[in-house]
Image 1 (cartoon, rainbow, N blue to C red):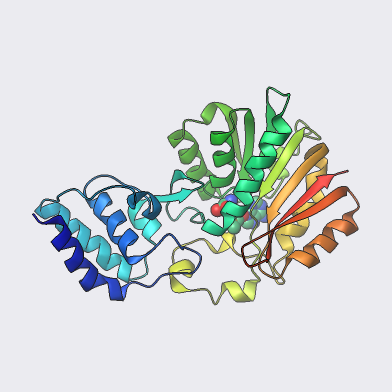
Image 2: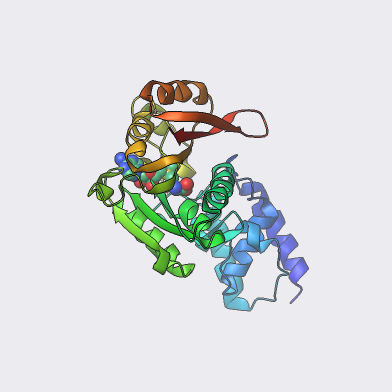
Amino acid sequence: MDVLKLFNELKTQFGPKFRFLEDKPDETIDSTLKACWQYASGHPMSAAEAMKYPLSPLDENMIKHLVDLLERRTKDIPLAHLVGRQNFLGIEFLTDGRALIPRKETEILGKKALELSFELAKGKDTIHIMDMCCGSGNLGLAVAHLNQKVKLYASDLSEDAVSLAKDNSHYLNLNNRVQFESGDMFAPFENGKNYEMISLIICNPPYISSAKVKKMNTEIAAHEPALAFDGGMLGFKVIQMLIEKAPVFLEKNGWLIFEVGLGQGKFIIQLCERINKYGKLQTVEDDQGNIRVIMAQKA
Ligand SMILES: C[S@@+](CC[C@H](N)C(=O)[O-])C[C@H]1O[C@@H](n2cnc3c(N)ncnc32)[C@H](O)[C@@H]1O
């Protein structure tokens, strides 16, 4: 078979029917076709990963499978669910409807958390970090995968999300350094054992107002859990709990680092100041200068 001819025919047939979301910049017509092609040939990988490999010839059944995948993609089924993978910080994660698909924008938080984890680990054998609202586990597991000194505690209210995070931990061979729990925010860890011994708490909380969650694009609303987005009436419900409770678990000079929505940064800095438990407060901006990450160091 002529691989290039088939690729170009499928591109002409399906390309104009795909709709792409702004927060999934890895997905283009080419990367979508390539990821589905690799999946149909028995090699599941994300859109970002699929761009690195040449396409191999497909047999008749594989071509049928590929066309079926592409048709489903035109019906707004997320690509990450069709191929079961999403790349985050260069690492392939398992993805399905149990948790939010890791987003590219969250890599700003992931990169800063990783950098902090290396700084905090200097001169130590182990550091204890928490991934609160862990979803698929992408943030905490990426940091634990890239920094061998990390012992990770991760939790989420959704038992489904925790089961996917456990699958990812197994997939990345990290089970011996990770403890997963399910429950409301810090509740699973409120037995005193972890008080004042965590060096870094990472969190990508739900921060969209309930009214906006109801109006989200079908690709998101029909396929990803609303719990992953819904931050209550004003969007700050979970963030408020996070910044109030984190100091109980952080060691002195330990950091809480979390993602915020567009336009929320300045107000949330004020919320952190009011709590009076943090010394340094810093922000990380995206390329357009928007505050996307807040870093709060326990005084
Ligand atoms: C924006 S998603 C982040 C998921 C993942 N950390 C990521 O970056 O892709 C927010 C997560 O918070 C969880 N969540 C919502 N309310 C929660 C609560 N009260 N306690 C713990 N987790 C909660 C949701 O289930 C969801 O997995």
